[in-house]
Image (cartoon, rainbow, N blue to C red; front, top):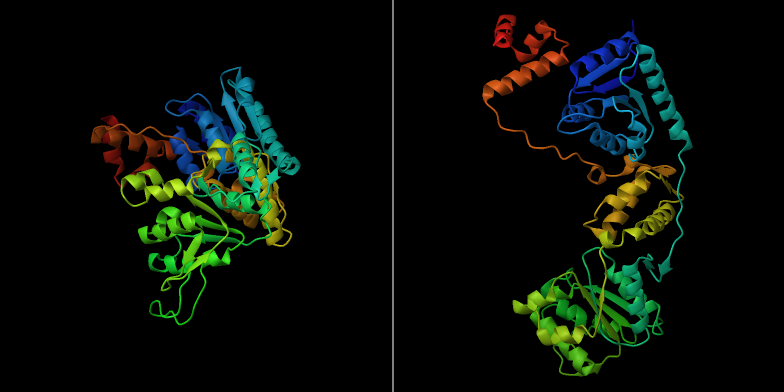
Length: 441
């Protein structure tokens, strides 16, 4: 008799229930795998292709609810059947967003098991065809997307400064969109026709940053074979945005202080001051007050730079903006990759909302870009990286004598071999007589 394609994983801490399930399913030509704990089940899932899961809910250490959450994200297309001795299962399952979950109440007959399993497999196929997609309405201000309270405060501050040339300092974690805020200040205001020059102070070698910012004259240093304007001269009449200003050397800080005080720039190697008319916006994810205390940042420059401060909130504090941002990036990369427009599976959004986003918007954009590449018309859970999916926090194994550990392993091997002592002896690499003696002990 041939074995069917389906591999069924059976999970229950009651060995008698596992054996009963196995007998019924093997009679139907299913291939089964048994696990007496969630830990063992996860191990099997990682090493074996499993087509369906049948699990109990009430188990010691880690319960079946955790296993359902884990499989719904790591194996979203795998059908699941729950076996329970508790009649309130429907209420319990209502709070678990784990796809199509059928349930079977103990005790059950062979026919009831077959009917429930057939329904589980059929429902899973149907569900995969009728999944809906969710579309969100965008909310934008310049290049900023979002309508959370934190972003509204940022926009209100931008509105206050966009039509004057007050110096603005933008703080926030890496990846929160500080440059987008700077661009919005420039392009939403009355000076938008002027140039916008963005400079990453952390991306230019320290010995070159001064020359790049302020320019130099011929012969000022080796390799200076002509006069050259710097970024400040290029931003004349517009805005210069100095990102990661905390990386600027004390020499650059001193020159920048003169620009702020005198509104003029002196090129390296020159004595002539050139008047500049521009707005200066700076940003950093460093704590400048700590740098001042460590004598690595000028206190007088700090107060010159922070005439107006804007703090950009991290993504974990504005999660209500995630649907809008996802829509934005889906559209962006749909266009970039030539009509690869994908929709978001509703099961994906709760995962994105649950994650804390240490890399902020930049991390979200990278993940959506990856998902668009890996998907066709629908971004599903399978397109997300493993780091976003649900993990089970297993308690650490308790320390025990070697003899007890050996006993547990021998019993585990026997269960896996359906109590076949010859096969177990081969796996343990001991003879049957030694195995009998160990079992007797």
